[in-house]
Length: 147
Image (cartoon, rainbow, N blue to C red; front, side, top):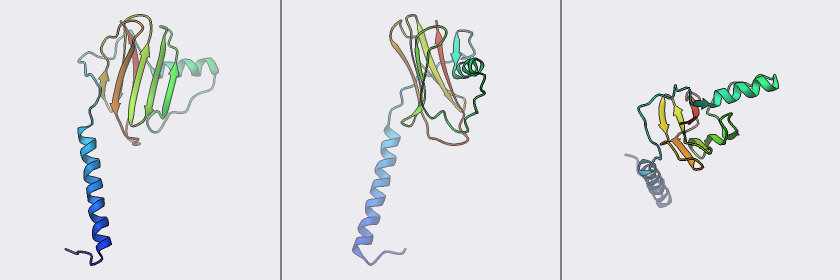
């Protein structure tokens, strides 16, 4: 084992190890706000970011390029079912928030792992979040639904 003779090098190495250890511990104990449901998101009452993108592309006539990484930043849409839908990737989470004046919910999927909100009462915000990092191999999907 190579122990530095300089006290400053030893002290810096100890601080680095402590910082890394504390960071890993904080990540390990961070709670996630997700609710997994056994029901399928392949439901006719479910809308998705892909539907919104296709509708926008059809109305503008300009094709949108496919994203290579996660959907960066917050997106806002006003679905045909009404209400206000926010979705996207920001602050190390993929998120889907939906508010409408009827029973509703939202879901997110990362690499096939789904986080689904509970059925939410009219006028309240449904929340579906999943922790994520920006990796080129990740596939994210965003959904809203009405019940």
